[in-house]
Length: 94
Image (cartoon, rainbow, N blue to C red; front, side, top):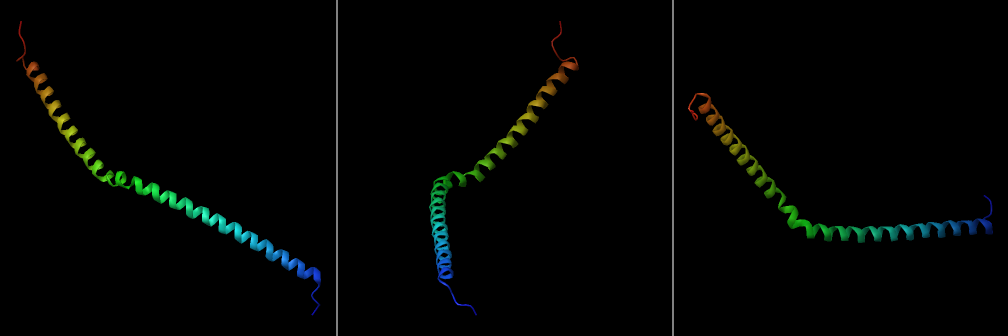
């Protein structure tokens, strides 16, 4: 085995210090991510009542769509009946 030199020890110290600085940076980044996540959670909590209403609104829109279809069929049938009545000669005669 070779003897450990002063330069080897210095190199190891620098490597350890560099790794320590990287860990501090990662720790700071992790703290920033936690803060960002907390902000997102707060925002979602404020939006939660609105988000919870989406299924009810979708159901109401579906109901309106059904009523719209029923109204369309009824109007079409009525207009068709009137046009048919005129076509059979039941309309205004001069």
